Structure formats: C-alpha cells, structure tokens
Image: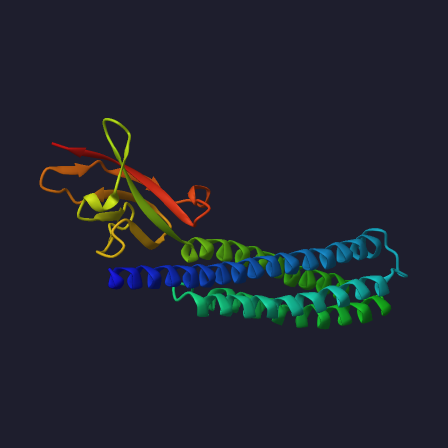
Length: 266
C-alpha cells in the first residue's frame, strides 16, 4: 500500500511539473506569435507612409514632398521590427528547449531575414531621400519599388511565423485522460480497476498508449489527436470502446479529460 501511495504521489508531482512546463512552452509560442504580429503591423505602418510619399511625389508631381515624416515613421517602426525580430528568436528558442518536438530553425531563419531587411529598408530610404532632393525621379521610383519589396517580405515572413507558431502549439499540447466506467444497464459507476487495464490508439498514427498497474485509469501526456479508448477484457467482463478527439474544451477543472466506457459483465 505504501508503494502504491508513493507511486501515485510521484505521478501527481510529475503531472504538476509537466503541466507547468507545457504551459511555459505554450506561453513562449504565444509570445512568438504576438511578436510576429507586431513586426507585421510596424512593417505595414512604414508601407502606408511610403505609399503616402509615393502618391505625393510620383502622382501629384510634388518636388517638395515631405520626406522627413516618412523617414521618422520608418525609423521608429524599424526599431520596433528589429527589437521584436530578436524577441521571436528568443521565444521560439525557449519553446524548443521546453519541447523537443519543436524545431525552431525555420522561424529563426525568417526572423533573421526580417531583421536583415530592416537594414536594407533604412539604407534604401536614405538613398531615396537623396534621390528626391536631387529630383532624380527614375532612381526614386526604383528605390520605392525596392523598399516596398523589403517591407512586403517582412509582412509575409511575419505571417508565416504566426502560422508556424500556431501549428507548434498543437504539437506542444498534451492531454491527461482518465477512464471512468459505468454499468451499461444501470449507469452506476464501476471502479476502473475492475478491468485489467486500458489502451488508447491514435487514429491518425496508429500509435498505442497504455495505462499501467499503478495508474490503471490514467493516460498522462497524450499528444493532441483523435483516439480510440479500449479496455482489456476480464474473464467474464469488459467495456465498450469510445472514440474521442482531445480538445481543450473537454478538460475539466482537475486538468483531466474524462472518457466514459460502458461496462458489461456476463
């Protein structure tokens, strides 16, 4: 009895620590997502300022166009882009340290490209100011196209980072499942230990997870997915199967998803 109590206590401690670690990874992925969104917003802010400048200079043929306002907006926004591209790298790296299933290389590469483009936007914007001051319209138009291209790349990369961070959240999310038995005739609860054990088969991968002797009714840390839950039959009794898609909405206040199987006996 003492051994069972010790193992159960150890399981609860592991469950608590793992839940905390999982939440930390999810928080890091949320920060990655939010940082990418800030990058997208700031790049679009510069793009809007560039459009205003372009219309005034190219369409309205205004040689005294307000370049200073564009440069001010560009400078402030690109500082933010630089800061939050670093944030992306930090948080996705932290998430990867907390979950070996997360490969940060793609997001880190995109964040580095965003930061590199920030330098090009600054350089080309400085060149644009000179071209406009010299009223060199052909050069100015070319520079405007190049700057717009760098900004579009930042915007698109930020969107891709958000998509990847969201996908990683599914990888990082695991669930704890508890099996409960009810009598198929009366609906009365039946102790889960009445049957020898239980299995959960991932319907996409075919991977099977099992409960053990000390936690016979509990599956810890099942990856997200759809599972068929089965019971090992006894000599003269058994239980129905149930197919369940694990989802946050199913998690109870105790941190478990309850899967109910119909118990039968001869």
